[in-house]
Length: 435
Image (cartoon, rainbow, N blue to C red; front, side, top):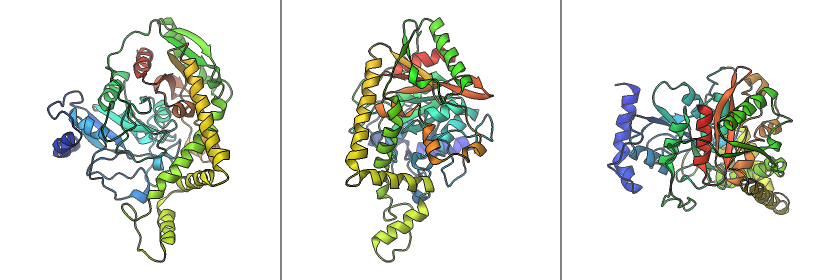
């Protein structure tokens, strides 16, 4: 029996109980029939180890499927397995992992990007019908999609249920998709979107036919001035502008826009994300699931031993920074101020979308760096790499990275962003670029 046959047999074993539990149609298995779906390791799959890329959850096997998994199974998809990631999503290069790091399919000496690096790598190399479930907090879909040359869609916050996701930052996490083509990405997004009785944050809004793509004629595209210039590789910028001009020649209207609070978004994002991460990771204490040690001395010492052994350096750094920003005396100075900046960032986008339908920019400022280059970077330089993706993630708007050419022999991604629940406009523009 081949690997794919074994996958399908295991999938059938859990199909019926999951569709009943989530109130799905047990007869409708058609839209994803023939596809295998890989799953980022922070999304729970019944009977399959789910560690979120961390040793502290090693051995944890969920007794349930995340809602997105149940929806995929109900449409005939087979769950292929888990893809590697930065621990809990803490990284831009997919090197913050105790497991094997993925290698860029275009150059194995370079990073895939993170934190959904395994999803992007597998999507790029799979020679069978394949779709990937991934997740983004600050750019974890757009970054690896851009660097590996695949399509990555991050939906509106609340468009897709997060039930069954191992959280990084609750107010920022979004489950999204990767695929080789825009049409396939739209198909998977269509399947996993919509209401869920298990997640009160999901928006009860109609789900369009995302795989039904049309012309971009008349589409208004804005180019934010803050997303170009200093820090962006000139060759990357040239490829992105060529794609924008191509859309213009196909009938789109292009104009300049400004997002003035972009320069504050990186600081705001990391304060909020780390504060939420420090609370979310508090439950990993070695008592209920995952890594455990013999219980000796008091509980505080026990928790410290488990977390020292189970968490990586970057996870510890973010927990400590996040805890610091929530302490008495610092909460007002850092966390609450960051929330106010987030509101300003949202207002920037809302104002821009009064005049345009879609924003276009580079997904990443550079092509995928080599591992030896990454080793020379300080943590703050790692965080700076997310400068083009954190603002739309803060705002909770949808975005897509679509390949638009090569620079230095590596893929370049065009980043398209739209107003809340306007995924269809993004996919139309991305499809036109793909053509």
